Length: 188
Image (cartoon, rainbow, N blue to C red):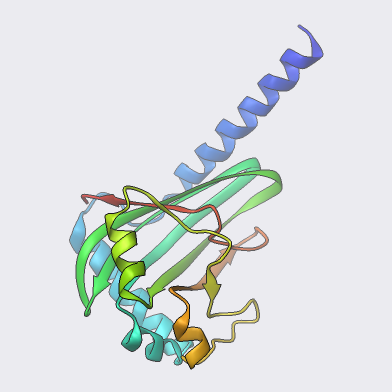
């Protein structure tokens, strides 16, 4: 067997292992449908408001919020992430979504976290809802810093079309970014 074939097999096995670890971590949402997702969304929002009180102001000004209660991310060379959550408009669940992410590079470990996307403009919310698969990009504004501080809903912040809060991290993997993350509508 040539070195090149051996290297390809190692890379392929590493990628499959990372995706298997992600699936095995189980994000806790399970297959119990919409009632379980809604209960986890409620608990996530309560924790976010308790830990970061300024996010309540953002929620009041947002046209909608996508709440992902638990995202499991793992990597060993190649990695992936998965979670499920709900889109809320006027405090009512209107759709359910999954989040997926694939990554490559120097990485090892696993982590879990919650995140909320605040859609601050009606066009941003409309674009998200009409998209067959919306991807978060590098232009996403974060409202909770790496130090855990949250920002207030000032004029500059509220002008951004989509804001993100990533919190409740647990695990041994450095960084949680939503760049390259894809959201798809699901039926729980």
